[in-house]
Image (cartoon, rainbow, N blue to C red; front, side, top):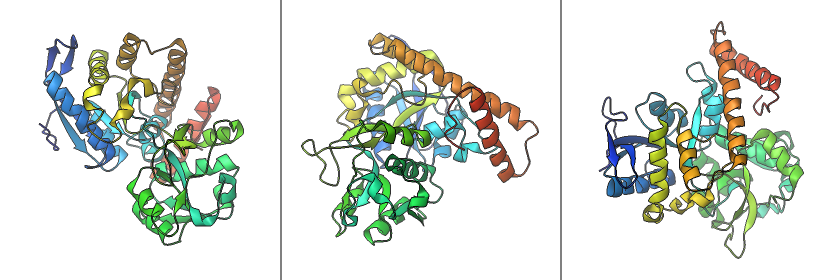
Length: 381
């Protein structure tokens, strides 16, 4: 049974031993997710249904339209897991909405994430004649006000072609849907999207059409420029979606996993181990339960991404024989990076400016200085 509202104090509730898994797992759990009807929400519901069928565990999936709304219940220990997007990384880094006085860098931890056949990158109106990313020079670039995931992402991706926002004409929109209408109405030429989004399909069927300029993984310099601004993007071979994508006509472009199931570092390793193991072992039952759920396969997990895995998840991955020494070394370095930023936040918050704007600007400088001192990439400046 699913209840989409949280009862007061509904936290991590009772633990019950599940013989099939041999570990304690919450009898009742609250997870947060993107809005009702989103692919992330639907995947969370599909997995939760199998937790009910196999484990007898009730999962309440609580929708929220923004990153802080999804993460706040997990931070307060009123939910076990949040199904997030790239906000997982922004929370770790303490930037954008997480660079405010009430947040700061968070000790986020990965559990599992979905990687499907789609790409998540630059979409360009076909009538522009653009063939490569560098051809976007002088074109109009879509920016959504208040959406760092979209705005930071698209600026990072045009760097693949050696471009900055100064080489294009930024056009601001109030929402993602408004930006897409702008593309169809010839108000903007390029933006960030998933190849399987409903908007990209609509634009593809419009008179302008859309295409996805290639970003070959062999172009090391191009990808190095992207990663200086957005290290969370990885090269993918998109085989589904708008623009004529198929297994026969793929495009090598950018992407990252979504949805991202995550939690906090201080959550019980036994509980997160049991949840991860259940996600792995019930995969065959839920992979057809929602579009994109097949991307949760163990074989598709990126073990060396930009956010560290939880110790409980690592234990489950080791049992399955997929965790490597290289993955552990990478994970340890990510945990160290988080600690550098958390320590910098604690030091900065003492005696920081009372003005919100001055506080945020001062934090970025303090954060950058701490990372530079530790020999780590600043990324956000």
